[in-house]
Image (cartoon, rainbow over all chains, first blue to last red):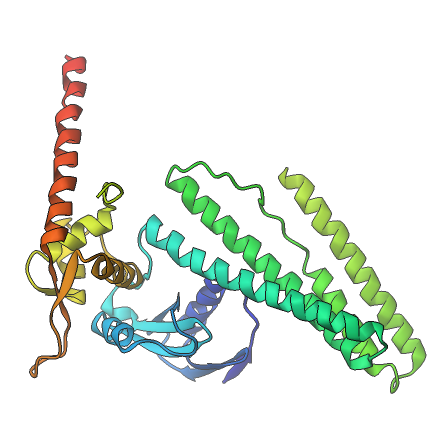
Length: 234
Length: 106
């Protein structure tokens, strides 16, 4: 069985993989949002997701270490490492104290931040091309804008986890960026705009108009809701 | 050696578990036994700790790739022992001072 999911939150992804395992589907492979599952006895495996040091690979040292503790590396993707362990072999947790959890999430936050900045730079490059009237540039511009917003949200969310961990440690957080989350409607609207630009030549202009208006409404409601959320948090 | 102590609980027990040559899973088991199941080190926590302890020179690889089995074993170094003793002194002081609480209670 193959399922498509886009996760920007490793904890939710882990939860989902473990829920699937409980229902009798063991994840065996991953490629660009597609997850491969095989039938297994319900609850046979427990999944965990780690963040490694290398892209699409792990060191021999890491592999041997994990094998020794009974964990199997199912898939590496980017810096992500998906591991599983037989549930019969006992509990499977990767990070069991606050300090190592902070270190783990800090690495993840740095990655999200760097990727968000790269997307933002690409967005501005496409923006320049778009202003010269290049249709494809407009399409990519909207996609990149949507990706930037999603990654910024992921960065904020990871930051929030780190702040909470530090508070548990008794450190007073000096963090001003508390929970600034942009509503997912904003990137949805951007992606719709991207589709509209792409389909402008081929699809009936009334449909185009309707979708374009919908995209704008999405983005406006999204922006309004993002603002509302932030005020609540103050 | 200013910022070495206090040690985190995980580092404290890992150093203790490699007072004799010990491998990854062995460390997890020994710490679990010592604390009667209270401290169970996660694989990620232990892996990261071993990497950083090795870098600091507090532990070293004792044996690797012996023909019979392929488990990597670690052993505490003199530097690691020194840090551990320093931490022990700090903890003894804590316990000594904790007695003040009893005096006040009486």
